[in-house]
Amino acid sequence: MDARLLKMEAARAALAHVEAGMVIGIGTGSTAEEFIRLLAAAVADGMPVTGVPTSERTAIMCRELGIPLTTLDDVPHLAMTVDGADEVDTQLRLIKGGGGALLREKIVAAASDSMIVIADETKLVDRLGRFPLPIEVNRFGLAATQMAVLKASEKLGLSGRIVLRMAEGTPFLTDGGHYILDASFGLIHDPRALSDALHAIPGVVEHGMFLDFADVAIIAGKSGVKTIKPTR
Ligand SMILES: O=C[C@H](O)[C@H](O)[C@H](O)COP(=O)(O)O
Image 1 (tube, rainbow, N blue to C red):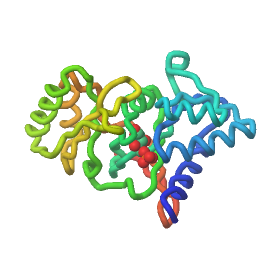
Image 2 (cartoon, helix red, strand yellow):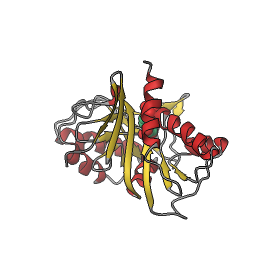
Image 3 (spheres, helix red, strand yellow):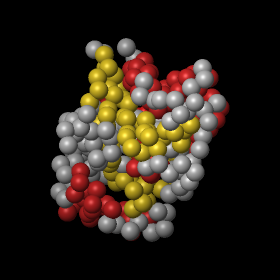
Image 4 (cartoon, helix red, strand yellow):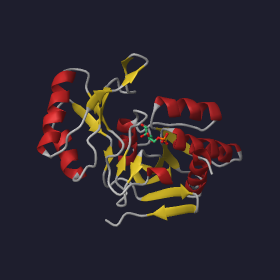
């Protein structure tokens, strides 16, 4: 079964959690886009649902497909958010931000009663860190922030390349107008310590580790769809 079909299966299972009248967060990325297509079909069939998009890219797709949208300014508390991930570990800690949407995704997830993660089985890992960690940083003082990230990670015994994400020859800009540093630290032994260290750096806007966010992960694999809940 190809990856797209698996993503669709996970998205289909997530749609079963959506109830009429809900306002839900809508994630970003290729897996979230499978969910958006299915949600749009449900809306076209008369299901009253409103979405809060986690990126401009998601907003554009939702509008094109006729999903009604609102913002956290109008609805600051959501029933749930459905989103993909770059990595999911056994405790349902995530790495997100491969598409650069991590900040809005985290804000929306934090405003939601529950976060449902949808992914194909290639995203499941024993320990986070195979996927480079996206770190969203303010454009001001980039080199100083990059050095501070390096020093903080070295203190935690992590090493690896930290590179500025580029897009078509220029630095990639997030929806919030920030840069992304992609940090290839390798396996992250203590995600909480790294999270705290990154949050202590003034130029760091947010990082892509989602710790204690996901309530359910719906993982589609060759042998079927399974639902994982955190052990915390
Ligand atoms: O910034 C992007 C998001 O965090 C995505 O949810 C994540 O990168 C997974 O994307 P995909 O479903 O395309 O693998």
